[in-house]
Length: 222
Figure 1 (cartoon, rainbow, N blue to C red):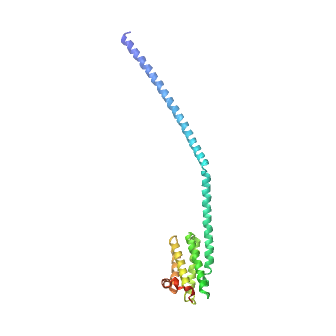
Figure 2: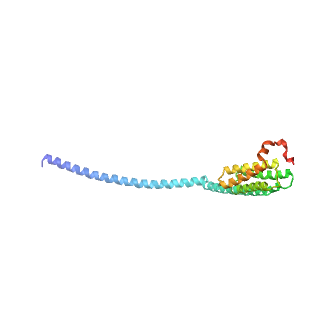
């Protein structure tokens, strides 16, 4: 065998060993890659569980669940308080409003002025406490509207004293403001404005408001 043949055979053996070594290396790398994937999955699951545990520990340590429960209870308490306030004002407005017709009877002017003043005070208090809405506003509007129409239709009533018309005007303005801040149907507003117009025209409300002053002491006027 020639020297070149030996060299060629030797090169073949080297190539074969290199190929076998490359295959073994590839298998080894594939095995390492698979192991890394498995380790990564285990680490990811471990991390996920750790995160869940950290969240649970945080909620327990800082009382997050208890705080949420307290907030829910507080919200319910506030809603109940608002309902109670509205119910209280509804009773107050109904009670004071039921006395409004007394002002068309023969009674002392100071007494009649106090009746309308009490009703107006109830309206203002309800408005400033955000309770003049819904059924409360509906009741207040009906009471004042019916009162104005009643006095207009009562032929025996020729005039109203300044304290009465002043408080009626205040009540009208409060209800109109409540209307403007809420969703109220057009008919309700129009009916109220119609009663207001008739009342203001019969008792010359605009003129009284512009010409009487606090020093005039209209309470004593006959």
